Image (cartoon, rainbow, N blue to C red):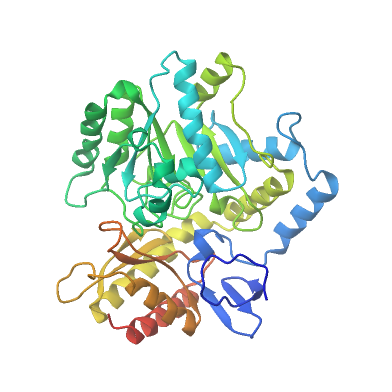
Length: 430
């Protein structure tokens, strides 16, 4: 009997090693990691230099508590990361995972307004569907019915107004103007922040607004004194073919950027919040401290992993690679759409791509969920790992697959991924 508390009742193969874009299990099977786990393993598996950087840091300084000390590796990483993201005057708040980072951003936005003398600002507007994390505050911010439903009695719903998801039929500017309607409905003087994923992840695979959306969102937020939080946990760090996906459609600088996943690319738990100089100064000039913290915030070994990963991303040109290999993969997915009528749509940016599945007879979501899971199971049996999801239409219906292999994937490996997915789609015709 295992003493492990598994995530579900299905049987889990035991992974024993990984290299490049492949993971191997105890039975000797090889899996192409077509989703980088959960869009995490950006540089691929088995990079010795990252392991060596972590070991060297562990031997030198494994842990300090952020309320007492800082470290050279954290100072160096914050400077390097700010430069990579073109956020030169932003400050890094380093934590262990995306949920912690989202939670930190929400609390930071709240404290910012309190320090400014506007304690009535507590609401955070987010979108439906969306996903910002599993901790209670991050989950409350999320618009993902299936993951939220059990916990709704613990959530003060009126604190989390929801904006409809991006509408491809609207211009980016008109789409963003719907935020103004929500703000006026709830009272803009009660709103602390608007938070969104520039390219949606788990809740509505790779859905993105039209160009102009984020620039208009930023302008509306400034007009109403609301902070703009870009949740780049999945879309950032080059995955969408740019350091930050919020800038794909123009030069946009949010007040707060949430990062995770690709920061340390799975080699260590690392996520973070990048806060503007104004947000940082306002909090520090007020109480003198951010009233929040985690034990492992700024953990030196995790930060050393992040610094080594950033070295690889920059040295190997993986941001450009994500854009180039993403174009190849997207073209291949369009070809699969022509062959498999239960693919209703393919979309995305860089190597954050989505395959929307449904009923070919109606061109709509299947009446009952489960198609994405069946395709993902068939893909896994063929040796391809994907990221299935459902609920994008109404919280229950709306099947999709999220694809996001490591940014280091080669052209031949993209072809292999497409062949494996083609076989799985043939195995599960709808």
